[in-house]
Length: 491
Ligand SMILES: [Zn+2]
Ligand SMILES: [Zn+2]
Image (cartoon, helix red, strand yellow):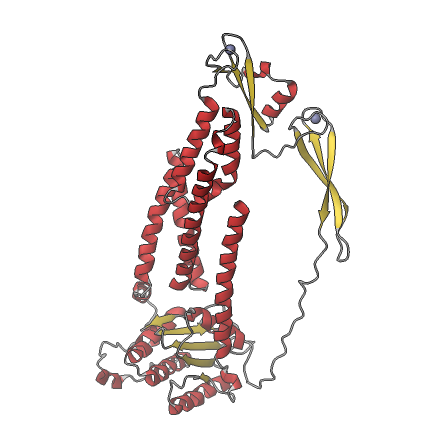
């Protein structure tokens, strides 16, 4: 059960990862690198920009590049499927190695029409002069208003102009002709004065379409984590800790992830679908199993029933916690109550039928052998001693601890053999496996036993040859890399 569930879980994950990887590669390689297009700076595969705009941009960006100020590539595509624009921008930047290797002065402007998204990806060297907040303001002020009117030629041209003028420390481009566009809201601010707290506010309060879904998701998750915390722990203080941890861990990691690789609603949806599927699967599996085994659980003595029931579900404890809702936590509670009853309730004397009494743990040692007492001492087996008051008959029941690492000793046959040390005799090489021995010492009789272990051959498939021969592009600047700097805006 444990194995099959794990297998299923991972196959689904790998399947999903494989799918997205495939379309990812295809999309990225489907966008032409402007450097390969006759040393230009604009990738316009879907002809969304006019030829005049493209040649205009090329002239301007070439001058900027020759001057060593920045290498700016503009990419305008109709669609990238369900991929995240920020991720694609980051990948294109690093695949094309935009900007010079020395100064890392690359900037990629990616516009995705169907997702209504503009992304700036900056090289390390530009992050200082062109911080994220400036990128964001340039998009908001000079590009988004035109994109909303489907005037992409103006959006791109004005965006590039604003970046160029910022980089060359000129005042902002003349925007007087925007008055006639209906978006008179545009405030013309010199780029230098952009950095203020109010800018940060507007950056973080901008509403994205995914926000409402994330909010609903967060509320659902919050409720689930509270109920899980209550189900998992009886102690109030521990419960609060569990709830806090379950609630904050993913929030923090998503926030952290979002900084470098934005998590899209698509990714969250895929995870939710996988989780829901596994949730239903484990519920059905565990309920079917308990239904099928119901009759076999009623065969034998209480002690035998206890062991059979416990061992059947022992490996599933973690599943009932990970997939606690809606019913598995209840199932586990009931399961444990049943076990408790089987172990501690109504044991009758086989001889006279009287109800027997359980001897307390500290007094039961007189009924146990030295080996059994040792097993109790090292927690490998717990013994319950039941005594009949009428005929003084006693009954010793063993409850092995499934979490104990102790093994049965070959000499005295008590479960008191414990690992003591590991000795490697021969190291593995690329041609031969190695081996060694694990030594165990019995806590009861003191005798030592050993068990051989094998070390797998050292794999050689890991070393790969480096490719890295460039296509001989003669671009003046190539070799830049980006650490994920830049900003994005939706229209
Ligand atoms: Zn009796
Ligand atoms: Zn022994």
